Length: 112
Length: 114
Image (cartoon, rainbow over all chains, first blue to last red):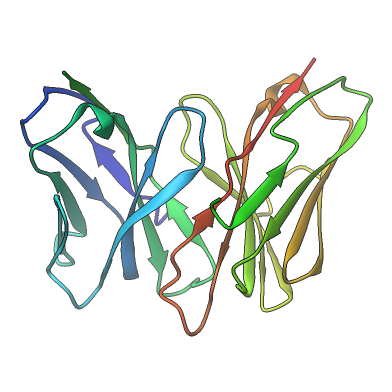
């Protein structure tokens, strides 16, 4: 399975702290994406990193990708209570480009 | 407005009912997806319609039947469901080929099977 696996499953931090979530996957990929989901809502795309990229920034988000280790990390800096949500990595395999497969997610709680 | 609209947002049905979930995308994308999200489980890809071809997940039971009449509309027909089918059903769209494959999701249809 190409499914990503996020780590940790749950994370609780104080407002203002940084939050780091990790994702591992099993097969070669075209790209890796991170999504956010507020409770009971749809997923919202945060950032995409291609297989030939190593790091990408978007506002308070920083994503790294290590294809040799088949892993990625999402860093949210200066967290806010509004960042409380579940975060998912998703991979788009080389061999089945029509299928974007999600990991189980990390539940982030930011305490005001 | 996310660009992908799902109706209904909530649905309660008995095991003998027949109902349908509807999804409409206003983004001009050429691929649409159905995902199932159950409690404490990863999102499960159910069906993909890409460039007007259907790609199936062979583990999806036949009591779920997708229909994609055009590139903007996607349906999921439900019949003789089981209580374990209760979940949040998410529709998404993307632009395959020329895009990076970002998925744009609707808000989901929360299904409860009694």
